[in-house]
Length: 91
Image (cartoon, rainbow, N blue to C red; front, side, top):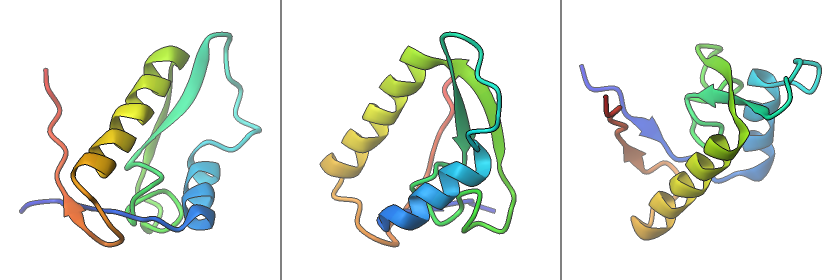
């Protein structure tokens, strides 16, 4: 079974996804940021996806670079609202 992610462009819903997975009350050690999956910018996110998500504290610089890469992916592939895409994790 293929598990697609679906692009979400609504800023308020994206914010709710992010805040559900990584609320401000969650302690962030120095140099770390809370990262969530599925991405907040998808319909499968923490708030819009039915509550099936994960989070982890990760290196802040790497997390920011990952977010920029995701933004470039959306831009270069013209990923619009409800467009489906796949994510491959490279070992």
